Image (tube, rainbow, N blue to C red; front, side):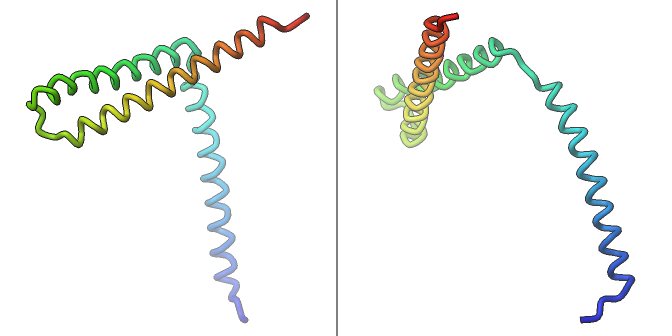
Length: 109
């Protein structure tokens, strides 16, 4: 297997370019991460707003479904299932937060 020096030089050039791109991507990633840092309270508020939006969207479809005014039953059922899953997830997160709070509260110093 005869590999010419031109091919070897091309491979080395590609490796240098890849290393340079990796370094610049890591630098931009670090600066983006520092900009994206949020407080816990803002994350919690956004999550609760998301739950509220999903549940209210599902609740809007229920009267239409009962009266027969809804054209797409499939999307209404998907919205209700999504609402149920999101609400159950929020309850589980709440339970874990309360459990963590109780664990911290019961710590002995």
